[in-house]
Length: 276
Picture 1 (tube, helix red, strand yellow):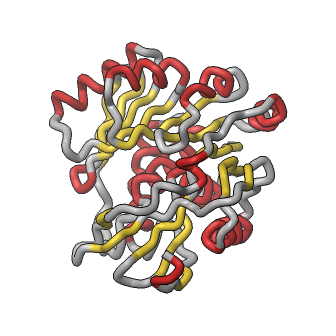
Picture 2: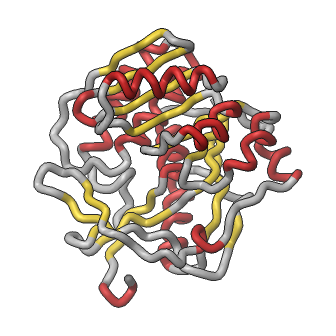
């Protein structure tokens, strides 16, 4: 499988530990797909020109993720502030709103689309601000989209007709709302819809056939990036084998492993208060 992720990159800044880690949904998915054995992984995004952007690119270099088609802007990187609970759950406590990804939106060129056509799958998310590009991307490869908690009808109408895989965070949803959400996405043209529910596991549907997946027992250190790891595990396994049950089981294993480490995929960097 060849996958390209297009969208967000950030550094998750742990205030209690005084370290930051590379992250962002699209970066996390690209790295984990590569670790899961994808044949080729690449990333397109917008980088700032601060030391945090340098660290993100350095981490991508270590993982063998190409980012040659990315944009490079003068400005600061996304840097959400995080604290951990005693149970390892991450709690976001804000962050600057003048980052390069807040100021500039990614727009794809003809050359970008020709490059994207080399891949089997493009992963992006609601954090990437490229909803208006999905129709063009769809002409070149299949699309995976992480909605996070976004389930507004107008947003679903904009995105779902163009994508093959839809992922939602739904720990606060009841079963009726989950089933309704899944049905809506299918009716708009999305083939596979998944809702992760934290400790309650996940519910997925392929064209109306429901699959349930429990979480894997693990000693939780940090839940940061677990959902992205689940997505990457599912995409890499399903794309190769087309088996929903096996792909979901593998995805749950990947998520549990991510919960056992600090940060979304490692590479801590110490910061001081003056750099925040």
